[in-house]
Amino acid sequence: MDDVLPAECIYNLLPRPDPPLRRPHKYHSVQRKIVQKDWDSKKSSYKTMGLPKVEPPCPKSHLLKHSKEPKLPERKPYKVPVDGIKSSIPSEKPIMGLHTKKNFVQANVVDVKMSVPKKPVPIYVDTRRGNKNLLEPSGLLPTLLYRKDYGKIPNYLIKRTEEEKKSQEEYDAYVKERLKQGSMKLLTEAERDNVLLGLKQNWEELNHSYQGLSILIDTLSKQLHKQRLENKMKKLEQDIDLIERHKFIYIPRN
Image 1 (cartoon, rainbow, N blue to C red):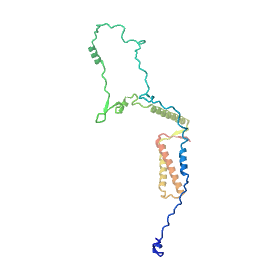
Image 2: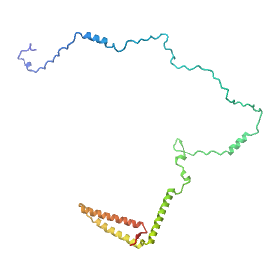
Image 3: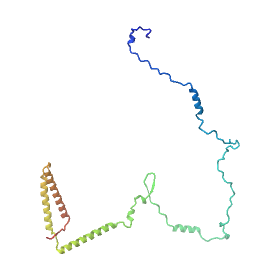
Image 4: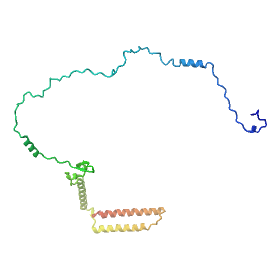
């Protein structure tokens, strides 16, 4: 194009891409084919030690059909052993023409009359298609009513009751012994009521003080005062419950 266009052509101002680089030709040896041929000829020469020296198979000894199957021994005729076996034929011949006077029809009738009829097995049907199931293991029968120990007090309850009774008797004996010695006395009903009334009045006073506490408890002294009131009220509630549950109260003498 440079030969056709003049030197001052406007196309010369346009950028042109660089021509691609040409790689130099690789070197190829002249002996390449000879070396390749020699390599191919010796490539598999050491795979085996040569052909095995064995005799070729005989064409007459070829594999026949069913020749690999195991052969069973020849079948021999079976002989029934006679020695040591008792004959089922009786040695004495039965007397021919012997008749019995037993009436088998009448005997069968008597057996049927004396036999106990079989009870039907109780079943139940739970589907519309008639699927039957045994009734006894189903739990629908009151089988527990027929137990030997039904309606009786269990042994562990009897044992526990006896232990409680014994401990109460021991406690009563101890209290009587202490009363005889004069170290304890029984509170009368009036004294018990007075003690109970006093405890309840104390609880009312503490509860009034507790209700009068401020809503906002933000200091340590207020928290301690509230906790102290709660502990005292809880202790009074336990004492009141103890006295109300027990009718007879013993106290030591001064």
